Length: 231
Image 1 (tube, one colour):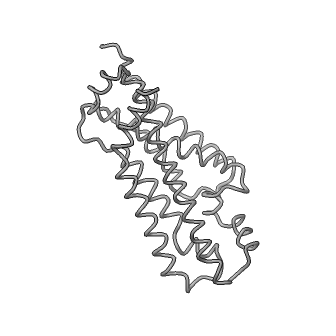
Image 2 (cartoon, one colour):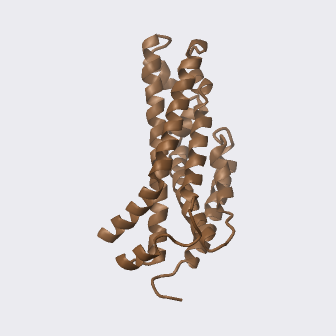
Image 3 (spheres, helix red, strand yellow):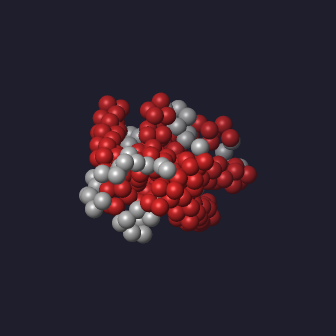
């Protein structure tokens, strides 16, 4: 268990500064737009749209995915550590997927927290009741995607979005290390745009396609890594 935690610590140490920068960007952007736009809105749903919460989250998601992918050199920086801990490159890759997914979960939770902060800032102004604000979660596409309380498909797609982003980041990092091209990140495009208004049958098809593409990228990256035996 200690070697697992040690490898995870390596990945979190490598990416935590990028994560903090992304969280800082999202916080400044959301709160900055709130104070700029608050005089122009008459409902919480309109406030969410005017603050471009969906765009800010998309940018945060993209920046964190890209931040996870950054490698200072093409040779594994942790080869010696893997040998010392007696952990295979393949196992380390799986832990890398986990660590990068956790980073994206942090970005998502930060955005949820910022939505709550915007709500707490907005409510004392007395424009509408808390009941009306709660009801707006059913009609605002951004709130439905980020806080999926009323749509079953979003209960599925939100975790998938975060997991696939983490897997894509780790897979691309491995393939770059072996001078291989990666195609998995193209599958993340549907999660960056607003798909909430798409028909359910088309929506599921797009998501399944993304899952298949990322899975293929993951398998190819997994095959490149060694299982602890020198090849």
